Amino acid sequence: MGRGSTTASSSSSSSSSFSSNFWSSALRTKRLLSPAEMAAIDVSDRGLSRRLSALDLVLLGIGASIGAGIFVVTGTVARDVGPGVTISFMLAGASCVLNALCYAELATRFPAVVGGAYLYAYTAFNELTAFLVFSQLMLDYHIGAASIARSLASYVVNILELFPVFKDNIPKWIGHGANIGDVLSINVLAPILLMLLTLLLCRGVKESSAVNSLMTVTKVVIVIIVIFAGAFEVDVSNWSPFAPNGIGTIFTGATVVFFAYVGFDAVANSAEESKRPQRDLPIGIIGSLLICIALYIGVCLVITGMVPYTFLGEDAPLAEAFKSKGLKFVSALISVGAIAGLTTTLLVGLYVQSRLYLGLGRDGLLPSIFAKVHSKRHTPIHSQVLAGIVASVMAGLLDVRMLSHILSVGTLTGYSVVSACVVALRWKDRTNGQVSYSAKQEGVLCLIAIAVCGFGAGLIFRYDASFIFLILIIALGIGVSFALLLRQVYADAPGFSCPGVPLLPAICIFFNMFLFAQLHSEAWVRFVIVSVVMVGVYAVYGQYHANPSADENIYQVAPLEEA
Image (cartoon, rainbow, N blue to C red; front, side, top):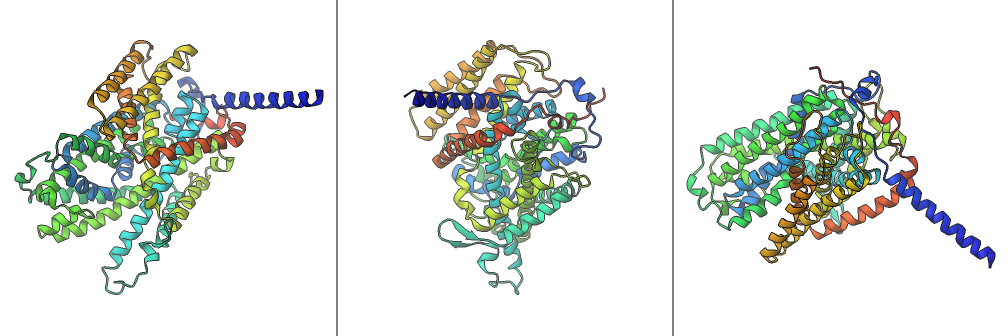
């Protein structure tokens, strides 16, 4: 009896000890260095090489944001919204600008550290939150890369089939995909394209940036040609009625086209390779987004002015609009622009993945091999190869279109957490003092409440519940936001400062969660499953190997800007 009691007591003690150690590790944070500490660290012979200028960063953001979708999504959404799709893109663009302001502040506050949203969450909140943000983002990146690679392979095959020797002679399994059941789909060309881009990225950021810049300039020039060529074919009568299906469809359209702008956040992950990050990162993030907004609006005005919105096709609406006007050469340009767009989007996506793996390798949350940087190439080759292999396997074997409806979970999660980080890091300056634990808890609860209100408002909007409920939950969100403003003390941010803190980040969180509610229900299930699985991975591996205060985790600091 005594022995059984002793065994039970020992088991209880062991369980209690594990739980205590788990939460002690999970709630660790990464320290934000003071300017003096940053200046004292010598980084001359370590880390990634600084090769990216402000122009490179702008082109990087455009390359990540504008793919083949600008030639397709503008027309497909216009079929449902009408000419008012232009307002949809304006609203979505304005929302993304708010998110970009949050990214810009944190990108200068962490001037030269890879990691992006993962790193910001690690410093502002805790280790476990950062690991979960990384997990959701990385799954989005992997599925997105595989999907884009298959689309690019299909475009390449379509161009080859323009030559008589290849016409109808290329098997489906080469580029279009040969389905085997509901899940498997063999595609040989997509993995080859992915590995070629991976090899380019392994050679160095200078080479890959040059290719990205060339392809991005090519597609931007093509989009501008498309806009100007189409402008001469515009019939203003096609813009009336402006919102034939009601004002509500314009807002619904905004929730759809929001994802067309996703990609500007990739600039934040290039901080360690920027020549002058404190100055150039905000330029790259906000500048690339504003250019994308202008291009999307121009294409929307042209496509809805050239032909009545009801005549727009589903697969290639812009190309069909130009063909109907006898401008077949523009249709050919659109195909070239689509290939350039897909290539840059894929290139930047693989680049960002490797930098995230590098950040986790340095922090110990992944094996140390992923923290290694090639001494001559100054690229994280092991991390880059891993990103390429994962995407290649998915692109070569899976029908990734089946997974497309669970995309964007990581993006919206990351954007919301970044906005919350701006607020949390303004509560205090970690180099000078700490707010009280109770005040921080209250602030975190307010941020969670705003997120819940946004998600609730999204559900009410999605399922056409009573308008009164929507007004009530929006009012509750506004009340919590003002409580966050009045009950906390906010310090000024060093470097670029996001205006309107905490109200502007609160708006970002609310709208991002509103969009989260518009995703497929499978996406919500994916969020829960991935979170649970990754908590288990953290409990088994991460908590024992992570070291947020190790010297190698904080050496990659930007030189201070001269006055």
